[in-house]
Amino acid sequence: MKRFCLVLVFCIILSGAAHAKPPERIISLAPNLTEILFALGLGDKIVGVTAFCDYPLEAKKKRNIGGMSNPSFETVLTHMPDIVILTEDGNQKAFEERLRKKGIRTYVFKARRMSELPQEISNMGKVLGVEQSAASLSRSISNSMENIQGRKISSHSNKTLFIIWPEPLLVAGPETAIDDSMLLLGFRNIASDAKTRYPQYSMEEVIRKNPDIIFIGKGHEDMKAISHKLLSRLHMVNAVKNGRVYFISDNLYRLGPRVIDGIKELSGYIK
Amino acid sequence: MKLRIILIILVSSVLCLSSLYIGPKMINPLNMSGLDRDILFSIRLPRMLTAMLIGIALGASGAILQGILRNPLADPYILGISGGASLMAVTGIVFGIGYSGFLSVPLLAFTGAIITGVIVGLISYKRGSFWHGRLLLAGIGIGFLFSALVMLILGISTHEGLKRAMLWMFGELSMSDWDNIPYGLFFIVIGLSIALTRVKALNALMLGDELAWNLGFNPSRERLILFISVCLMVAASVSLGGTIGFVGLLMPHIVRMTAGSDNTFLVPLSSLAGGALLCLADLIGRTLFSPLELPAGIITALLGAPYFLYLLRKKDIIGG
Image (cartoon, rainbow over all chains, first blue to last red; front, side, top):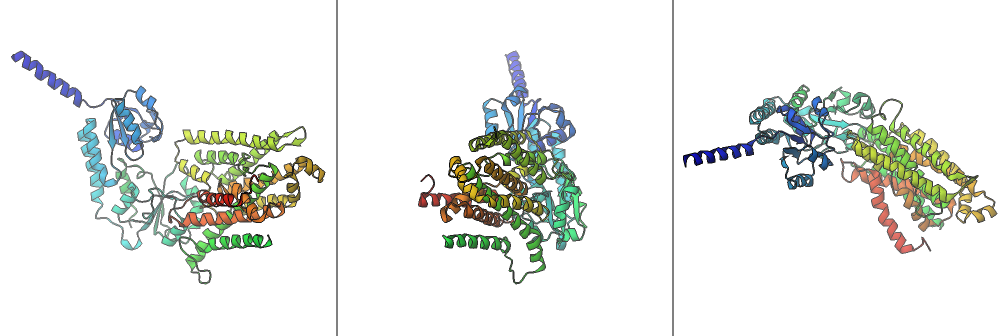
């Protein structure tokens, strides 16, 4: 009897361990998730990423499983992932359901705003068996958000526009990591009244709202040359007149670990 | 009839002018601040002129093509010219070559359009004659080929220029400025002038080749001349603002239903009305969801299609 109990206990422990066993083969379906996975030290376990995953550089060497909205189901299956990580913000829900029906484990990343990021990273860390590094990453993101609370730009010259692309004029609208970071530092985003997150913005409105600061994000081409024409048309705007047009990195384009650097970079422009 | 012609001219002029003063913010022409003046001259005026030029080119080419192809469904984009322009422009945007120095997106689009025009022309020209059925089919064939290539590029591209390429294809006026207007004006004026001197021939072509011969026109030659004028106008218009739908297809019909189908009036009136419609569409596009901008091409179709269907139901002209 004693022996039987021992075997039973052993079996239970074994099955429990098998269930809690952290996934060894991970597929990421969004560039920000790929960045988070690398930051959590899971780079070696990634067996597939999207065509948009270009950061860190090692991500480019991973197998490409297609776009964010149209990944190849077949390719995902052939890589036999233990888990597929998706995001609510950009992946199709139907794709996730299809994976689950096929018996593939999925994790849906729910954060859309900066404030939700630390908690969601912790949650994901638990599922992926990297609780500790997730906790430390989420802590450093929270810290970087809290530490600058005191440092705010003065409110009389804080009207800001963040340009993603100059022709046609695409800007960072509401509910983006960029908008959240600007808010945190006291920059007032003049495009936060737009109805979409990355709107094509009216040039007339820019002239009328007269931003004090213009940030121009890094694209794949030489942004200085490309935005020259736009800036010359905005010559009457305060930011251009007072030389407060800044070219900055794409750290804040994705809701991932690089937001820490992005916030730091942005806070460097507080005068 | 005269009254209706005057009415079209009047309404068009009022629409064009009012698009200068109405917008996300009204500008009072009698009392303008420095800010108003800046917005008027650096943004609205070049936009309105660009819209006018594109609308003029599309309206006129639509009327001409419906005549030379003897097909009410013909529009300026049916000849594949816009497909060639899109292919070059999208390639330029997605591969980032359209932003470096000399090779601008408008220039790429113009080059694509002209090359396509030449290809379509060469395919259609056989044994000394320029047959309209052949022209139509060559245009459609080339158009399909190029749109497939555009889709291929967009499909495999992961570049962040994707959204910009889509916006360009919808017809984009938000970045119009003074720089491109002289070139557009040059080609569109040449194209339109050629067309206006050949309106009598166009009238004859619509009666069929045999009657055109009897009236003293060489159908192949006239078609070729008119085709060249259309190529110039469409190439210039596409390079100014992308592919803007509806104007070229339905504006000539709307004018025909209002002022008759004599090409002497139809061509100039379609072009004027096309210009006015595009001004109105742009006005709505930049005002309706301000500060968000909508591409004018979407608005032209939303505005024009229902009105066209209404006229069709009421007048019962097309197809007798």
